[in-house]
Length: 103
Length: 313
Image 1 (tube, rainbow over the protein chains, first blue to last red):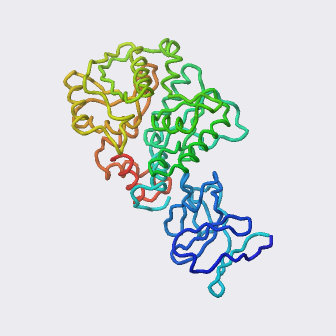
Image 2 (cartoon, one colour):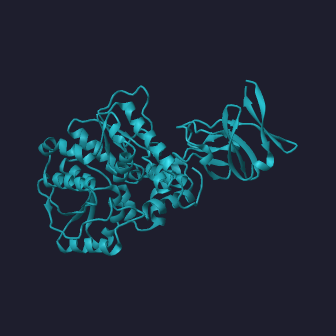
Image 3 (spheres, rainbow over the protein chains, first blue to last red):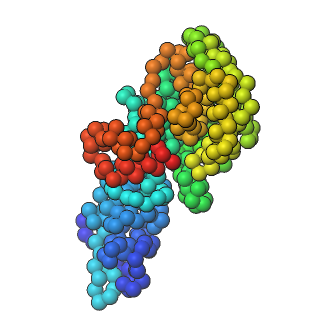
């Protein structure tokens, strides 16, 4: 599958925490956790929970609806063995954040 | 499971439900977290509420009691079927509504005639989000036991206990639960129901965050002891959790009313929550559960935090 690198904004727009953004037609959350940027689906794969309201523990984000827990350092792996969260590659070039979204 | 010491969040609460629920589950206790889309129709669904995972003999007994009268059922639980009470607690009305609707619509997959609750909080939250518009009847399980009381009575044997019923009457729904529990208990031969004056609990149930005041709780047990009661019988899992520790100081046993009904029907059961609580020490509970949590690969520090939160709250 090919990807488009979509411009998500200036790096300074993404301080520590979770930031919902619309990239093309895709709702994504850009997260800065422990200094590192991640991007992932804005809806939990279990029941469409709002991932921008996730609780954060290190690199783990937990859906607020039922606490399915996804480790972003492990590519969105669900820690109970449930379906994984879709994550997207992030690149920062000259202070600009780009996210790789499937085309 | 991941270690966390955070006190009260969605994650810590739901992880405690999952963790303690699996550690205290009796042999043979099973429930679905998600009803398959192609599930066969099931007339009855028992909704296993979040905190009832700490006292799994209660839903387990509910199923066994129904089986005694030829009524099979599905038990559906896990945080995946949370009613939204936790989100209500955190004052997130949108998440509360979304969570309640996910659970209510999920039950439909079993095409049930009735969804049976054991938790008054779930009754209230589902009620606030239009459960009456669902194609099934949502009701406290006591209503079903009343519906089948003649069948249950036909199978009862005497239970020689002197009991004080504890109850809540803050609104019509809780009054009805109390009336139903009393009707069921009165149907059990051999039970001596004592005329206590101090057994009324506060609010809709004895909640962890709003428990029966200590002096009222002590008065209830002192009175029950003075009346010569063998047991205080409670309508809800929450009351059971709050009061069973009082056995240590007052010598009056605490039973959920399903326990008494199970005794009458010859159903044996264990009470893992109470067994752990009566150890009266987090360290002792950790050691008692160690074989099980080590087998499951759980982190000891996390288990200790969950035991403290769920069993010694």
